[in-house]
Length: 391
Image (cartoon, rainbow, N blue to C red; front, side):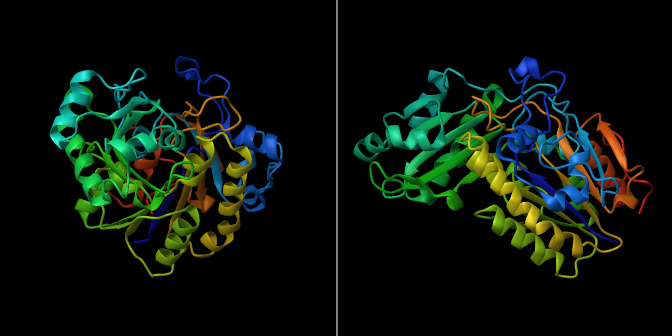
C-alpha cells in the first residue's frame, strides 16, 4: 500500500466563510489579500491549480492543472490550530474551547501560582508573544515571576527567561497547568511553554524550545485509527503537539518551514510504505500572519512553492499528496488573530480524485474520510471522500 502525505500550510485561508461575521472576520481573505498586496508569483502552485480555487491577483488559473483542487469549510466551533487539525482528522467540535479576552479568572491564576510555588504571575491578559516579553521581561527578571498570557485563541501561555526558569522546569510548570489547572470548564485547547532569552530591549523567543500541550483528542480520529491499525504515522512540525502526542509512530519537531520541508523530503526518500505523514508548516502563521507581515507571508509561500517540484517528484504512483490549511490568518487586516476562512484543497495526483474541480467541501473532515478510504479503514468519519475509488 502507498503513502499519504498531508501538508498543512498553517494559517492559509482562501476567503471568509458564510459564518465569518459571527467571528468578526467577514472581510478576511488571507491568500487573496497577500498576493494582491505583494504581487508574489507562485509558479509551481499555479501549475498544481492553486489559482483555480479562487481568483488570485498574481497566480492565474491553469487550464490543465496537475492536481485536483477545491476548498473546504470548517464546521467546528472555533478557528484555532487545534480545532482545525482535529476537524481535518475527523473530529467536529460543537462547543469551542474557552477563550479569555479579559484574562484568566482569579481562581485559575491562584491555583496555578500556588501549584508551582510562586507569589503571582505577570500580565494575565491577551498579548502578542513578542510584545509580552518586551513589556514584562525586565520585571520577570527582577521578580522571577512567570509571564502568563493568552490570545484570541484558546491558549494558556507561560513565558520565562531561560536564565530565570530553566526550560525543563518551564515544561514541568506547563504540564502541571495542562493536567491540573486547565481542565473541566477551563480546558483550553493548548497550554504553551514560551521560553525566551536575551537582555532588556533585546529579548528573543527560543522558538525551537517552544512546546505545546494540547487537550487530548477523542480516540476516534484518523491518526489514532491509523496508528492502531498498524499504519506508520509521522508528525513533522507541531502536529503531534496538537494531538497530545497520541497516535504517532515518530515525531519530528522543526525550527522552521525549511526544516519541515527537508524532513518531509527525507521521509519521502526513505522508501516508506503504508505510512501517513502529517506535516505542519508554521511560519506563515506564527512569524507573519500574527505579526501582520504580508511580505514575509508571501516570501514564506514562495519558499514552499520552490519545494513543490521536489515534493511532487517523490510522490509514487500509489501515493497521495494533499495540501491544505487549518484556518486563516490575514496579515493584510488589522487583526493579529486567526480568521474564519475556507482553506484550500490540492490533491495530487488528480487522477486519484473523483473530479478535477472538487468544489467546496462541507467539512475539513473530508480529508479524514478520504485518508481512511485510502488505507481501507472502517470509515465512519463525517464528510465525504474526494477519492475516485479505494486505492
